[in-house]
Length: 378
Image (tube, rainbow, N blue to C red; front, side, top):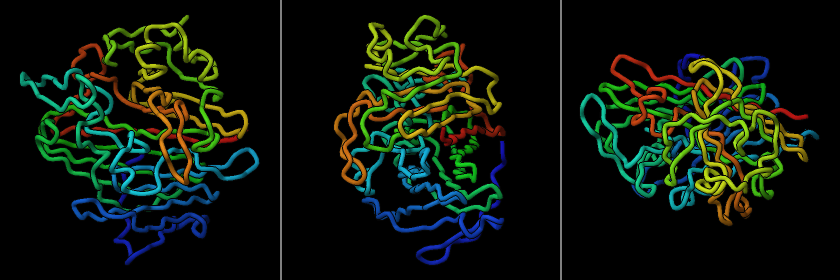
């Protein structure tokens, strides 16, 4: 994993352009513009990262949200492949985590409780009886400090957030840094790190909704998907893992070979019924901490391909089962199953499952993980 690097100096007034300092300097750049203000009066900015190929990511420091991501199709035409909104107010009012950074703990914790060092901590229950995505005001609803940084392989934006002891019920003063890099290989690379002054639990992830045919262009049921996982974690009716690591063989969850997402999404299977489609964590093959292939997705009409590499032990497949005619960017309507999410992560409810990979971060340790979304064409 790359280490976070020294930030470039302060941005100039209003808008700044930061070049990579390489042969691609004339093309690779970051620009900054206003994205509005929160109700409390905090200024929110929108950063546009453009690489040497003309691919472009727009990221706001409100929630670290990827607002848009322009990548080429097989004809070389750019298209925005992520769902989102046009304005800050829409993200604040009714965002189903479009494009956001998630913390302190991504996914669910059963009944909003966990025990650490003999003490039980109570969290918000904001998803039925359970805690979801960091609580009522998670990292997706925070204004992060943003700094452009210099990279040799593209352009990058570093985001920083301080979460005080007791926030949302979690112990420890937590300092988090996330580095978004749009590389000249058309990769969106996300490097995460965090430290705490007390033992705590942590599970950071990224929640972009993808549609490789372009946001708002129908469902993703024809996308072909491969997931590099022999097992998944089945859940109860409230989406909390049972603790079993179940083989995907002979189930609708077997994506070890390229398969259309819609091929078995309505199967007569209890787990499918619980999630109303796919909303499950996969156990990614290989060793945690090593950057390895987790998934590959192909969209046959546009010819766009996305691969996912991660250092994390798990990845949540979510197929937009609860989207319902959401009004998105540019007047587009996002229909049910109009996007998929591939959220690299530790396992849901890991603080309460001793057989799951540990989510504990102790003083003196550094939490690190990397995920890379790479975009190709046929």
